[in-house]
Image (cartoon, rainbow, N blue to C red):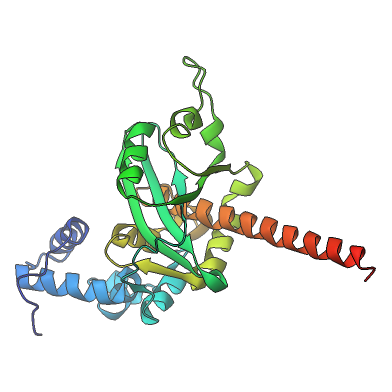
Length: 277
């Protein structure tokens, strides 16, 4: 086995994972091996890495995609080269999609839609236990020209003491239009299928969205110990916040595209009626 150069920096997540493997297998994993593992996982993604280079007998016999919601789709994107450098196009507006955590993680995706419906995921940010002003400040520092900001339905939730909505803090501090999804649109399983259908149109910036991709790759179903199988219910963990934000992105974009198409069809019908067609 040839090892990578010492310039490879091993992420916190991989170090924690390999620490666990050391304990489980009672075998030391040195720094060169850790850098090799980091390099390979960057190339293959978490799902394919554990399929091609399993660390334990359990991983060796597990199906690579078992329990993962987006494993297959993200592996295909990597294989096609759709995790790459994706620069900001200043001729096109940047849209955002949020998952709000008032006492938890807030996750934000920044994306652009190009010709033919290609979706460029150009940036991602998440933080813990910060107010709306913090996230608006981060977005404004990116110097993007904003289009629409997609929020989940709880953005309209009122604070019992202050009698305000989350949107009341966001709208004065961000340019652009604000879209709030209703509860029905936020149905998780339907939204997950919308994400699966949309992913083939996506390209991800390999540097700025690296953490988001890891979250999406690890987003999985709840394991049922009694039945010995996965339930079709999303597991709520550190990965689910980013996955929810991306689900809102997909559902919100689908709704906007449907609305735009409907307007175009109505315009065409009006022209046809005018000319008696």
